[in-house]
Length: 70
Image (cartoon, rainbow, N blue to C red; front, side, top):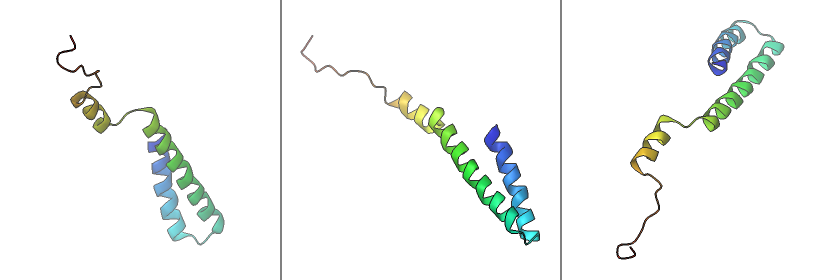
């Protein structure tokens, strides 16, 4: 949720940077881009993606027993 809100702010700042020739706005825009990258990285590392969930269901990590050992 925080990453989505930051993304919207980033878009608005991008349009402000295009219209205003102010170095302070550019610095805020670039700093906000860094924060957005960190939030995206943290959200990806916390929750598994749909692809990882699908891969885990297709390839369960069960111990394999060779035939004849039972």
